[in-house]
Amino acid sequence: NEYKSYLRMIAGIVDPPPGSQVQGPRIDGKKRGNIEMYQVLQSTSKSKKEDPLKILDPSCKKLVTVESQRIMSVLDDTIMKLKLVTLLPEISENLATYQDLLPEDITAMLHEHYQLELEFSEVVTAQEDDETPSYTSLPKKGTSDGPVSNMSVESLAQHRSKLEQQIRHSTRSIVRLFSRDPTSYEAVLKSVVERSPAANSLLSTAKNLRGIIMEKLLTTREEEDERVRYIRHVVQREVKATHEVNKLEDQLAEASEQREVELNKRNIEIKKLKSDLARLQKNSTETNKKIKADSLKQEIADQKSSDQKCQRLQQSIQQLKQQLNQSIAEHRSSEGVLRGRKIKTESSLETWIAKYDSDMSERQDEFEQIDAIYQQEKHQLEELEGKFQVLEEEYNAIMEERRIAAEKKAEEERRLRLLAKAAVIIQAHWRSYSTRKKLKSKKKGKKGKKGKKKK
Image (tube, rainbow, N blue to C red):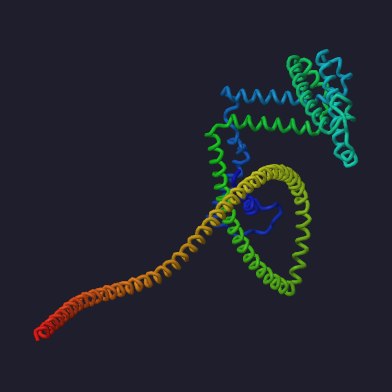
């Protein structure tokens, strides 16, 4: 089945249409092998028609675990309750029609439920009227105990919530009563058929959900992995089949080109033969007359035999046409199935390609962002290194200047110390010299005074 979609392209070479008199080009050994493979696959595909999607069905047909059985039981119970709840509006409005089918307690409960629904619809209508500008501009006074038209907005909201709780409680009670009386439940389902479109949609969704959950519970992890592997295998086979189709198309184009070349050669030969024939017709007019006379006699004899042969051939042609129509119908049906399968495979392949493209684009965007950040940080690092090198050179120059200044300052302090020490020494010598000089001058003064006194 997997090769029929593309081997039909060379079916014109293997099975030429009836009535075609133009001979095709010669087929080499490799092309003949492809044609024989097509014939074998075509003969086997008629005898074997298996469903390739059978592998996607779960092998287990029944629920084994207790948890899965409980889940399905809860779903079935929910669907049963949905069927009943969606019929309650129809039963409540036409309670007199269905009163004979139901017991008294269920009838009383349905009547009470219908009254609650009417009161709830009045409250909703009153709230919608209160939301209009003509009503909201007018203040209302009233309590929840009075009629609905005299209630305030707050009282209406409280009364609506109270009615909603009562309707829920009433619905649960009705469902419980019907669950205790299966006969009434079955009678209601048989007699009441009409439902709202929303209710039908809800039931359809619930049934679809049940089918999906049932399939999920029946499918094991190994079967899920097997499905994935099967789909991948189908994709690989489709790629291989596409390659084979392209290859066979090239071969078909080559064969067609060879056919055109040979037809051109034959056309040239036909033209040459026509020219020779015209020349011979001019030279053999008498011979042709004799041949025509003889051929006329032979034609009369052959006409009788050809009529009989034509009748037999007409019968065989009718039989072959019937066989051809049957073959065409079978091939069209199989072609439709293969086209559907091919479309499904192509859609799944496009989905995987789109997913791969999206993943690669995300990775490419992430790589570009990281590369941009890296280039920015690299540029910043180069700028900082350049600034740091300049600062290092300035720092070395400053440290060298400070070292030279420190050496000069130390030298200056040493020189100042030497000068101070020298000054101290000089001052000490000067003080001692001045002191000795003063002492000498004093001694000379005392001696002069003593000499004057003696005299």
